[in-house]
Image (tube, rainbow, N blue to C red):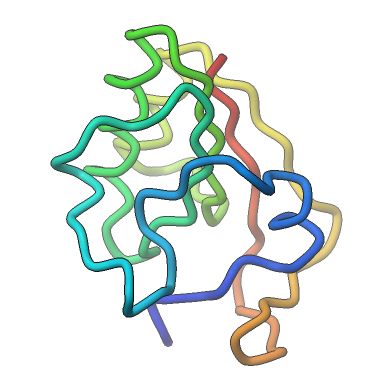
Length: 116
């Protein structure tokens, strides 16, 4: 299974103009975990290690920032529990998403997580 899935175009359009600390862009070489995020940030983190991205999102949200994450649905994880404790909002998709980079559908459901 690949770890990097390009965000679907319709989601990209929804969050157009928002800061993205981990884009699939080789010209944007930066460690998004070690920089200050913007007031409105959209994150589609690597699916194999979402915990550090979730922790950073919660940290940035505590500074008053509005953060949206695109994550796979997995209610059995530490990062999911941390999001619940942070009073995140969860939007689960009724079907599996088709991702831009490969036109394929992953074998897991996805959700948007909102920290406002």
